[in-house]
Image (cartoon, rainbow, N blue to C red; front, side):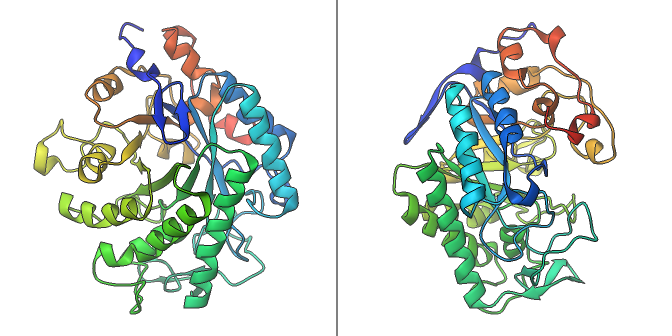
Length: 372
């Protein structure tokens, strides 16, 4: 690899968290936790990524203690003695390999999982009983259910800190519960959790963040993953202008978020090209500019095609990171998350650092069927 990749391997310190480089393993749902409990295979899977040079590992989505918080039986819990003992095994293995890690805590809301016939044995819940605009599913949450959900997020974060995790990420993206509150098409509430503006519809997320901050203290970093696109609609947008994005994200940073993990399909695409042109800031770049928060960018890093191809059973060829390096050098964002490339190739960071481009592995969808 001809480009100088040193910019990816600068250390970063944020509160109690120190990372050896700027590479993050993106959270990727794997559904290999029978009865919601991670085991030795899960611990070995994450350990291999720590050994492979990842600076910060973010776990697959792990669900909070609500009756209908997951949409597939293989998604792991982040509550209950058995599941938490499993996650203790995971973080111990990652630390033994010199890695840093945070769980992503999650509620899937009204979304439909990969097996539509499976449903939780409790009522599906969402802000307004909608999975997408005009598509009813489940029931609207009461204020009591909202309060219990906020408390469940806080308990999960406190457990993450108690087990020795280095940070925690809240899943507020991709059309799941928190994002269903953000999205005007799925939040039709007329109480204090609804509203015509993104700032108003961010109240639920801000309460989750505030509760987590109170539970973990001032020095434990909190990450929030956000997106414009939804699993229900890949073209969806909520913030059409920088001002709208500021109204959405600034209250969340004020509530206690340290890092915004800004999910987009292709990291090199400008978020507002009508404002600053075809080479303008991407989503994470604008989020950093508007809020001052540390940001993580993500989206088809190190591969020839974007992640939607994987949903269609398509592979992707390994690609260079040249167009990433310039954005890192100008500090457009602070960290870069890598997804599918790390599914197939746990040593991707070490190979990038050694400039061993010829050794990078292509992504095969067959890797999704096992924990490699």
